[in-house]
Image (cartoon, rainbow, N blue to C red; front, top):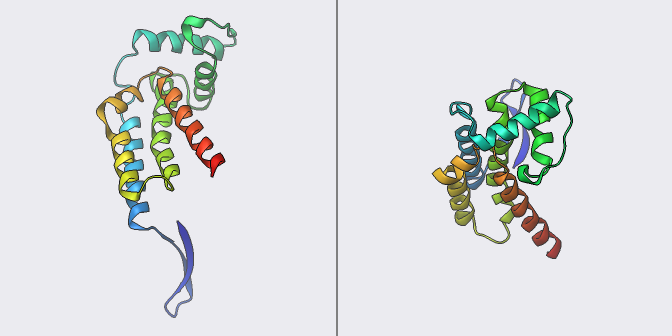
Length: 165
């Protein structure tokens, strides 16, 4: 993306224009649709048993009751993220799932990091499939730690490839 300053006509009015290549435009459209698909009516379904257990532990931490590690309930990342989201947006079913939804959209954005390894058509196909796959969409709207595992695994691959190049 490049921005270019141009003067329009004789009036001397200046406008900032953003030039997007067709690839960038398609990628941004896929990313926006992916984000909307993940955030739209995120709180429509009731919390599942696993989600409610995580939400309860996050709520207890938010209320100042502390956190004690229990291997049956994963590590502390999810709870502290939920607490931050509760603080910013209030505690609700929506905010319980918000971190996972944003992480799923972030994974779609990470696809662009593979530009030197996959051609543009492949990147758009990967972004489209990750962004709008019904299964992947479901699991990135679900209040479990799975989307974080996938996101940080792909991020590790991106870092490794950048380190090697």
